[in-house]
Length: 169
Image 1 (spheres, rainbow, N blue to C red):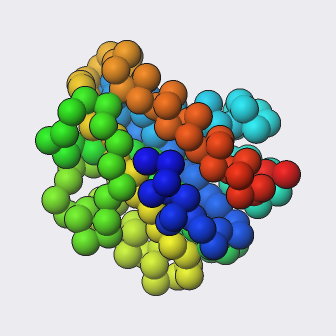
Image 2 (cartoon, rainbow, N blue to C red):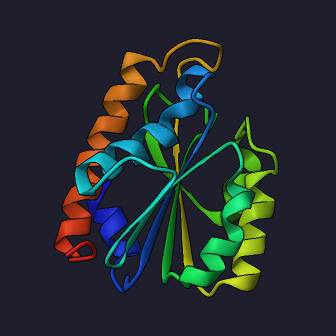
């Protein structure tokens, strides 16, 4: 995964990492879980933080609320992390191509992810990368241990990439 992400981020000058999900619905919270851990590592946990050329956004169930901020930031790359029903092994992380979004279910957003991506493409000249993580359960419960472990591995990978690209220093 690290090599694939590094390839996608090779010319990255300004990165936004946006976690999407619902913390009340089990593994749907994984995008938020990852972003919150990154926030704690690089600074403090809030809805939005900026460290040099790294922007971390906890978008919750309303990623569309952050489109104006994204237009102001003018990132070169946007990494969206979300739980996705992909018929994969629990916790599997997959880069979802823009034309594949329609094939997967992203459950708790106010707007479908496909519409958000189209909007961002229209108004922001940025490479958009979607990371889907296969859930175990999407119900009123805590995040599963399997998906939490997958999220932790992703956090470590992202920290390595961010530091390698010197985005937060």
